Length: 216
Image (cartoon, rainbow, N blue to C red; front, side, top):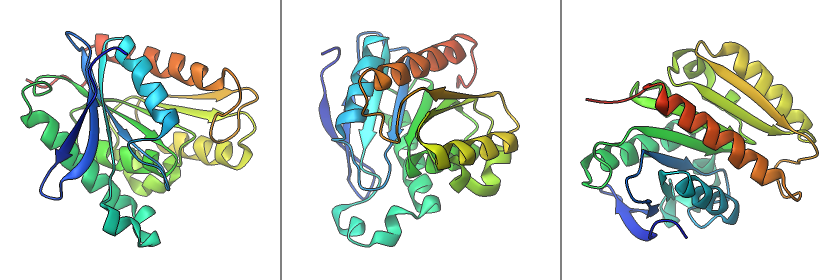
């Protein structure tokens, strides 16, 4: 595995996170999980490991405390989740290992909506990638997003394809919609998650090299 993984506690709420970084990391990608998922999500950890192999540090975190997760409404509270993502972003800027790294977001399912809201409220995010996401949940914040955004959807995830197309039309920044043939919502079919990784890595590295989102 590229980069040693370690558990971290974020902010006053001590949100649980899983941080990993290769040598000379080029950027930090913060993951926003979907409903019913968390920092130990096998799919997101698989993606995160591949991103580390391409030179990107990763932070997977639980956006809610265990007590908060008991209330089902919190899982779909996009403004709350976005606020937590911004909390993690601020935390990363205070850590020696990540203070100078450009930051991107990788959102899945409802987490994609939260990632876009957070990106709308922080113009220092250099790129956003959504996997099987619900970008429509970002609402009016879509029009304020300044980070180039990649939307990846499974070819058999029919309702979500439409929601992503509608959301993309509202984005006022560079965006792309990629439909992975044969994939359902969770990209469990053989080879489909590897296609997600290929598209996500290229998106992050391309926009990083274009110099977007660098802070001084």
